[in-house]
Amino acid sequence: MSAGTGTGGPGAAWCPVCGVSLKQLEHWVSWLERKQERERAYLERRARRKVRTPTDEVYEADQRELEGLLVVLREGVARARARCSFSPAQAAPLASLVTYPDESDV
Image (cartoon, rainbow, N blue to C red; front, side, top):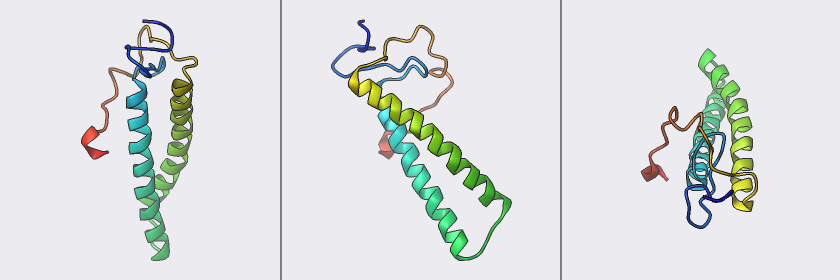
């Protein structure tokens, strides 16, 4: 495998941090963006009703963390598309720990 091609094939870049392909990164970004939209809509509905619970506070904190994660993942996607700094991971630290969203949800 050459640098920037990961598991092979055109555009099959590999993330050295999480050990996933470009397609998987794109899928994660899409899934997390939809999750973020659902949670924002939930928080907006609650705010309109003037309802606030500790769960709402946690969701608001999650929104900030999620935005940071999405920034990192989007950067990973951009780098993979540009074929820069993505090469096969020696030991992908997250690959075995992460379960991926069901691709049928896309």
